[in-house]
Image (cartoon, rainbow, N blue to C red; front, side, top):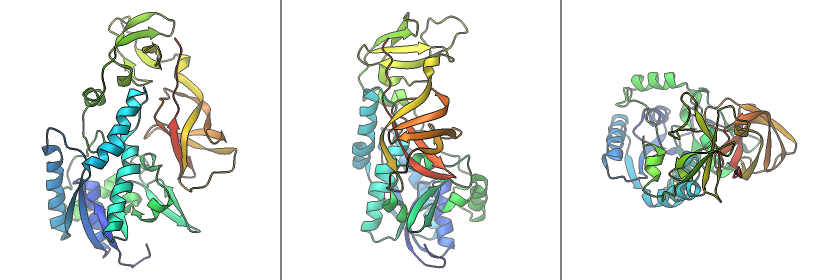
Length: 355
């Protein structure tokens, strides 16, 4: 977007402070701004989204911009939730937020924005987009503690070309200050947490109505049966697990899953099986659209907000860590970085421990 150029922009207004400030910044810059509130998930408590919609209406009215409302619950169910259920049933641990960004926010939302004739889609993500020699780069945000590039690493060149992240150059404290400066109704609103568009609900509680429980044995790494589990889908590698009969003061952690035998393997936090020196990646995605020249030295992050870890890429599906990583979980994403630029990433392949 060129300086001083007026653009027609659709802002995703969730009812939170970040998206509210995003809209306000674009209005202040003189753009033709329209807000949109997206309904993605309907629970038994319809007030879950109605409260957010009420705040979005208040913000749009305060800024003097129109507010559209779209219902993408069918798309969210098909493209995100069904994939999440399938992954958990396979004993893996997917990331709903990454899937949502890939298929919904910068999939069907962006398609709707284009259909309606908007030049850009803007969201309140903490990330930056840079362009050099015709290529778009996904850069980390100014506020490294809030950086959300981990969740955005599946975006491609076309998506980045039509996307804006106006608050990527601000720290969260600055965003709060701007919200008060603009006198936004959401200035003091608490930050939302939990599953994308679903809210603060324990994952096991959310999954149980959709995934059939299949109880089995819990086996220690020395082969001893120490308890029963309610289903491999509800356990994650690296998760602290209460077998109910562990020795007092001894914490046990999920080390692995044997899908064939339906057994959950647990061990001490310092069990060597919880350390991985290399991982195999499935469906590796490169934001540039081009495969890099190998071998590649870069940094990797296995979880949001994890400190960046040194690694090398020797083949397009293998990451070798300089320092072994603890609690690597099949299904989670390994996201690559180099000089504050997110290169892309892929899902960790299934790991089994035949006990």
